[in-house]
Length: 170
Image (cartoon, rainbow, N blue to C red; front, side):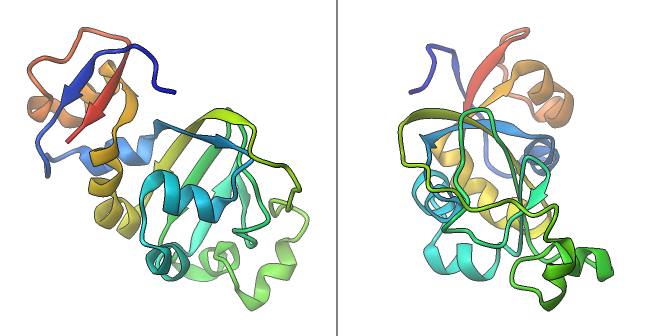
């Protein structure tokens, strides 16, 4: 459930938007839903896009392989990225043969069930920020007015409050 905060509409394509999405925004979801359901139902990604383009997923800093088994909970930090460069990046991506070498740090599947509202701190990186950021911003995200001002600079909306959380949409 969205808080009673000021809704601010911004124009699409403003420089700094990707940096804001990399810094992170808050999105409302259902606690206990799978990562796959979070990407498709909450963010609005096409199921095929979520499966094939989102290659690296982290929940609270742990890489995710099983997007159906790993569940989100209120307060979690979720990071989504396309393929990452280098051997370290390859090791952190989903469905990689060398993923077994990081099994101790990987997010574990859970049998949690959907239970209620969850605020998820979401970060989008590289191609995912560029390609899916607009979809996310159409739904609306909660961000700090100070962060919007910092990252969008002169592109920040005129009706932006001085500080505090806002619901940011395009």
